[in-house]
Length: 435
Image (cartoon, rainbow, N blue to C red; front, side):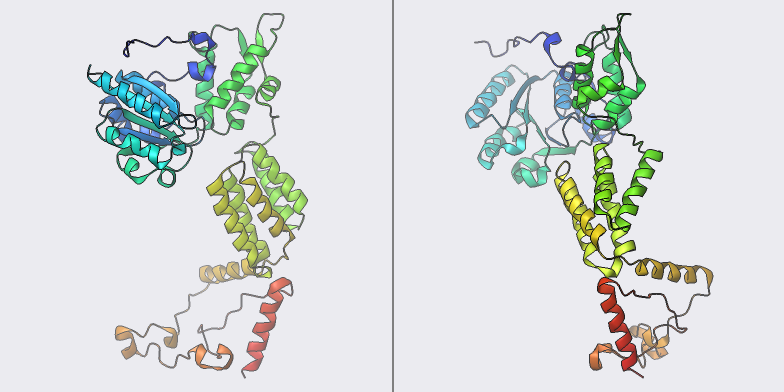
């Protein structure tokens, strides 16, 4: 068997559009300018053919497989691809043996391992000696943070690069290219495309180019031609192709701000059902879960405050958990936080208090710190700093009446609602207990 003979390639027409449209060079590659822009380290390494092993991580459909294929095409290396979910040590050893035989004829091998985080430590260890020698050149792809999912020895021998979700304009570029390309794309088909349809796919695919291209192909190939012989790819076809309806939610226009406003006001108004409805709309339309989580955190502090201090704790936990687990699971901790904050007793006393204090700082003469509160360390003691300061813990109830500003100020006015009622009661008792 000739190991160096070209494998029989499938007819390009039979391959999915997303595979056919894989970039052949870096100039065709859309997105990831933070690692592939002019002068960036990874681009320089690829163009100079000095690439060591590489770990690519990021969400689905952002170009991990395409980049590996592109690198192999640019460097003229032999490309072998395996998937860690179905591979084993025996297959790894066979691949490594073949790469060594190619190396004897001065031909490099790029070994692409998809979902490399699925390999256990023993399987990763099999790769180490040959990866260190640069043969084969490993390109691993994972949706998980490799610093948590891969063995340290393998990471230390690899360049780690994060690929980010594609922006809407980048998805539009890819879709437009597929429609124009007559060799690999849909350029030979007579297609009339509504701009709104492409914009919808770019938004709803959540940065996943593969998903957008698949929807475009399904719609184009399954839609009956009209009388003029054209395929009309409109918004309705786009919705059917990706099995999602369009929601009026322009990220930088009224649809966005009106929905976010309704979401916030529903939580403030203690209506968890309405708040969940507006959040579901935002998530369905592809809103960044972090935007939603930040709104919950702000409202927990501004509109719940000390009436239920746990609301802010739970909101912050939802923010952190949603970033860790990602969508679609992030909807669950976000929903828990929305329900809790919506149902919590409400008080905006903290919000009003800090705004009053800020107004005083902005509009009135700023008070000097009283001498007894100043730092008494170093030379300050000689100036009388800290003199006559009363240490609260030395007094009954750990409270002592003492001036903390030169002129009295009053900002925080606790309500009679929730836990804040207890705060109000305690503060009134403290003030009455000391004459």
